[in-house]
Image (cartoon, rainbow, N blue to C red; front, side, top):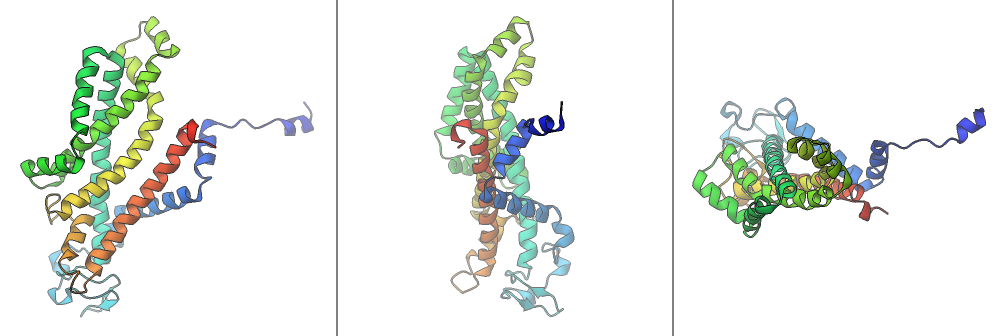
Length: 301
């Protein structure tokens, strides 16, 4: 084969390269991914990059309470985003709050994904009374508002990180189950599943090795949406005083701490944590929207 023929040979585009090309074709998706990466890095390295530990009483001074942005403390430290009523640096509080909010949001969504995915696969594959039982439970779950279910559970369980994770998992698993079940019903009727059954493969191997990989694209999209929803719901519950305790800071608690001072002009105590929460949710949704467009062939241009 000549050199000209080699140059004329088209390059084989792998699925991964095609996915990356389609994903990074959107400037909004790139901005969302960069913003989300920045938020995650700040949350991970907060103990090392935060100006202070806002929940270490030895580093706080009540005389620095409710200082406006750009003020300096008696020790010479500059509070770029101001302080709250306890004299805690708002910038440090947001960094530590992101750690808790992201950990709760991603952790609860991951557990809900595992439970809902298993329930949806079992319902679609076995059918019959198993499918009817699981889907009736899902329908009952989805018939109630998510925040109402979470409020009832937290009123019974009390405050705590584990309690709010349980509440968020109980709220979200049904969305994953319905999504997986709808996708798996279509895949179950295809030839490769019938061929696996003819080869006498075990049900577990067919479900998790053959059926599950083809249900992952819509799951990835749903997961990005529900992670943002979990973070927002945790912030709402913490704002209402039913989520995380004050010893486990989150963005919702930071917003709640400054709500009583809004009318007195101390806007920064709630404003900056609210901006951080909004920025995080918008970045996750931008990434999720682009994933939906890339992974769904019907939406591709």
